[in-house]
Image (cartoon, rainbow, N blue to C red; front, side, top):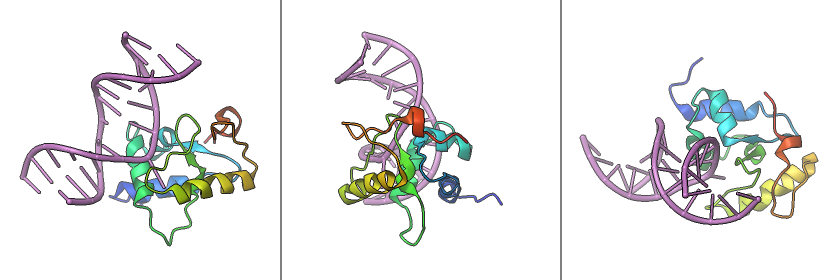
Length: 104
DNA sequence: TGCTTGACATAAT
DNA sequence: CATTATGCCAAGC
């Protein structure tokens, strides 16, 4: 079932992310089959449908940091969700990818 | 229809 | 080790 749109594909991969684990945009892009389009992954979440139960809060940048320029509210929410799942944050709000990065 | 921007990544300095 | 510069592709205007 190959969706012509890339967004649905990205959403599907993000749904595969287990709780208590985080994935980087680049990693997701690679799993989707669009290695190098890490930006589109973030773009997809920017255009994310509100009715979707998408664990977008498990998606962080390569630095294990939250990056949301247009949604400061979601930024706080993401940290809350991850902490609720057992993910520890550093002083700079950076997650220990060595321990929490999702391994497909 | 074409240019600009963008929830990133990687290499170079 | 931190910051800067460039590359990638799709969506928005």
